[in-house]
Amino acid sequence: MRLIFAISFALSSLSIANAVGASPSHVPAPKGNFIAKAPKAVREMWLCILWNESRSTLRALNLMDNNRYGSSGIFQIEQGTWQAHQLNAHVPYRVHVWQASVSQQFAVARSIWLSDGFNPWRGDGCL
Image (tube, rainbow, N blue to C red):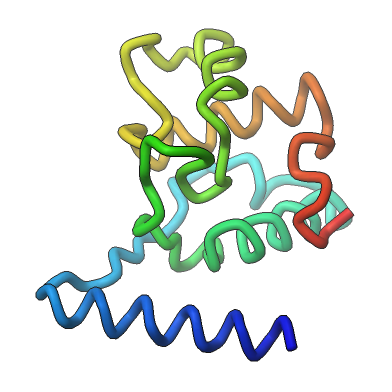
């Protein structure tokens, strides 16, 4: 049932994007990203999180889900969590999660992980 809903939602999202003349923006992960260099178990967890949170892979990051009304970005980070870690990740405080570049999102996700492990993503089906 969950898979059927996910497929249906994905197809309707693509239909809406195409109807308004937009196309999903898929870009590769930044070169030298920490996930690609991580040990296998850690890398697999990050790949699961990317997929479950934004339907992204390291080869194609889905940047379509950026909004100011909750979690946002490829890692679906909540604004409060973002703010708690962005300065440690060298991301200027004026940059909100829904405005962040891919590199900034990776930097903050890494900072969160180094501080809190995968706990902020508990409940997404990967832990």
